Image (cartoon, rainbow, N blue to C red; front, side):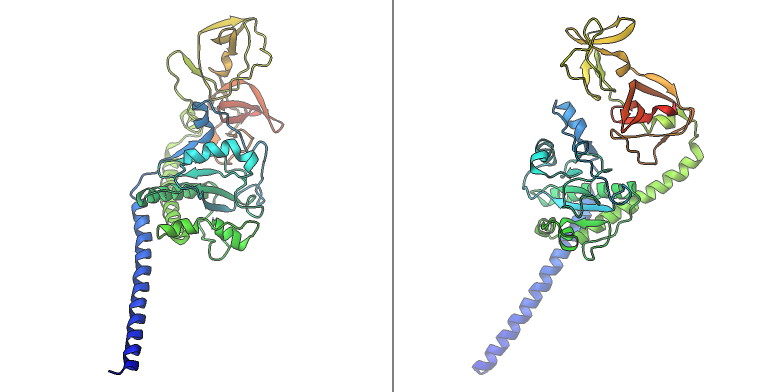
Length: 385
C-alpha cells in the first residue's frame, strides 16, 4: 500500500471511530437521563414545608413578600404555567436558600415560590401571586420554583422527583395541562432559558447547564412531570367518584377536613390561632408590646377573668384573650369558601351549609371584607355565619 492510500485509509478509520464514539456518547447520555427518571420514581414525595411555619418554630420573622409586592397574574389572576430554575449555588440546601431569600429579598430583588432539594420542598409563599424570578415578561405569568444543586447523582434524582411532583400538583391546582414550552415558546412548563429565548427581559440559561452535568435535559424533566400529572389525575378521578357516594353536604366531619389541622401543644401550652394583643392585669392593652402572631405556641401560667372577660396569663403581667386560643363554635348559614391571609380563595374548597365551625377571636378585615379566623392561615366570610 502506498503512502497516499495509507493516509486515506487511516483518515476513514478515524472518522469511523469518531462516529462510533459520538453515537456511544449520545446513547450513554440518553441512557443516563432515562435512568435518572427511573431512579427518581423509586422515591417517595417528601411533602411541602411552608416557610412561615418553619420560621415560627425557630423564632425568625417571616418577611412576607406578597403583602408588599402583590403581583397579580395577567390572566384573570391565574398563572399560565411554571418556570423551572436552578440556584447556581452548589451545596446550598433548600433550607439555606429559603432562609437567605426570606432575609434578603427586599435588597437583592429576587424571590420564588419554592425551593427544592433531595430532602424537602420549602414553599416560600402562596402561588396565587407572582414573584421576582424570571424578569418582567414572566413574573406576572408563571409560578416559579428553584432546584438546588446536588452533589451526587442519587440526590439529583431525588431532587428532580420532588420538583416534578410539586409541579404536577400546581398544574392540577390551577387546571393547567402539561405542555413543554422549551422548544416552541408555547406551553405551561418553561425553563428559565426558554423564558430568555422566547420572552426576553432576562438572560439566564438555567437549568440547562446544570441538567447537562447529569446527562439530563428539560425534555426528560417534562416527561417526569407528565408522569406524575397523569398519576395524580387518576387518583383524583377515583377519589371524586367515591366522594359522590359517601360525602353528605351537611357533614361536619367533611367540612372540618378542609381546615388546616391545629397543632397539638404540650401540656401547659396553647397554640394561638388569631393574632393576640397583649394585655396587663387590669385588662388594658400594653403599649409598645407586639401582638402574639397566629401559629405561636405560648406557655400558659393560669387562666383568669378580668372585667368579666377570660384571659390566659402567659408571662409576668402579660395576658391574652382566651377567644384567640380556644375559639367559639358557630353554624354556617351558607356554603362557604375558605380564604387565605390576603383574601384569596382557590374557588374549590368549601365548608357546607349547617356545618359547625370553630372560629377564633374577633372579626378581621382583609381587603375591606370581614372574616372569621378558622386556622392560623384560613378565613371564612363573617356574613356566612
